[in-house]
Length: 264
Image 1 (cartoon, rainbow, N blue to C red):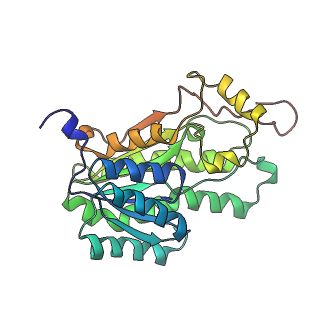
Image 2 (cartoon, rainbow, N blue to C red; image 1 turned 90 degrees about the vertical axis):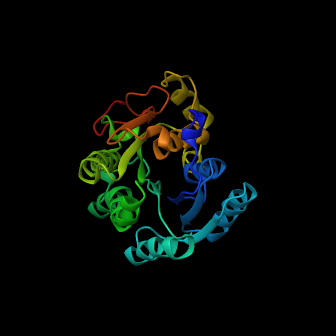
């Protein structure tokens, strides 16, 4: 097998959550180009159908599974349908997640707990549901975390804490599931997606770029390439790692107000 062949995913089946747009959609396309069949999960079926057509155009199978990952029954159905329709599960990409920057004093307990469940609990649930299948095929899990989970910053009490927990969960599961399943994560930086666009203005983007060592925001393909590496045989000796795909950021690059004055 040549070096580049080790990045192939031929014959493998990958579940990608949050696959309708952004990083999830980009990762699905990358995996399909590398030879994988895709199980596409997100809440909006119309978004999934668009990605599915792109996957099929690359000659791969695509199973559309409208799923709210916050609903345990739907997540169980997702895992079961993947096996029933495509016969196996080799890769799980836990990409669904998020929570907007918000001052801690303006964040309710319910919001905090919901952010934790959305970013950590859902990844835990899907991974454990797929674990038996993954173990049979020396599978791989890729958790999409964030630079916000690496270093503290104002207004990221909910999201940053949740992503920090996801990062630690990644390392925990890597230890528990080795050597049959590899579990890795990606510490994503500010990446051009619809989610970021909801808060992005020219002024904010310029400030973020100036705070990023690589002097640009990330592209979806940057993250998708990292996910492809971690999911593929090219990373066969890599587990429990958090790959930084964030332009060299050591912390979030969105200046936010401190609770009692100043900007951090």
